[in-house]
Amino acid sequence: MTTPPGDRVLIVDDDRDIRDLLDIYLSKNGLRVVTAPTGRHARQALDTAGPFDLVILDLMMPGEDGLTLCRDLRAGKHKAIPILMLTARDDEHDRILGLEMGADDYLTKPFSPRELLARIRSVLRRTRMLPPNMRSTDEARLLAFGDWQLDTIDRQLLDADGVAVPLSGGEYRLLRIFLDHPQRVLSRDQLLNLSQGRETEPFERSIDLLISRLRQRLRDDAREPRYIKTVRSEGYVFSAQVEARDA
View 1 (cartoon, rainbow, N blue to C red):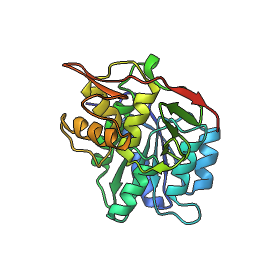
View 2 (cartoon, rainbow, N blue to C red):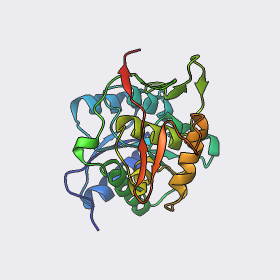
View 3 (cartoon, helix red, strand yellow):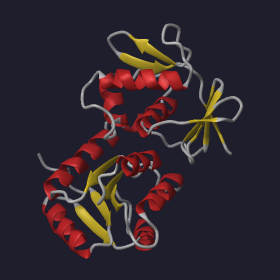
View 4 (cartoon, helix red, strand yellow):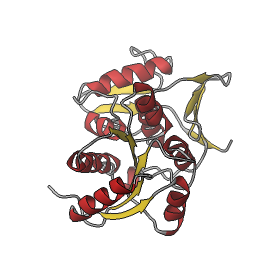
């Protein structure tokens, strides 16, 4: 299997040896690669050398670190670009924080270029699984439904009193998928592939567990759900009306 031709990848890493190695390897495997040594250079590349299909972002860099750049990308005009984060530390806190900031996947250094290529393919598959008419183009900061609002910039779920309810990276991605496509039945395969982060289990029924957790966050009774309804033999549907609002 080869990666579809034309995919453009931006590699942001302060280690020149890693940049050069990945540039050579990924280019040989059909990707078009641009590299940047700092967050400042990455921003310049995004504005002048794009568009990009994916960003590979090092967590630990001098000056602006990867988490800050990831957060800003998710809050701005480049928010739809998938992000694969690299970290030199196998620290659970860093991994979870990266995912909650909006990274789509992560990989711990040292890693093999072959594994990175496999992760790139996986992330691109997930982000492209929905047909074009089902992809979000909404730029509103707040998505309101029922007694709740989702702040898409700060990635927070707010209750009727404005109190933030914490969401994991997977829960946020799943809720955003539902809010972008209300009243539309989505299969387990679609939901699993689009919401999957490294914290989710790689089997089909894991989406049911993730939905159960999201229902708990929304205080949604699984026996008589107000928001997320099960469609037998088909998947799930978000049944509430969704309103896009500015902050």
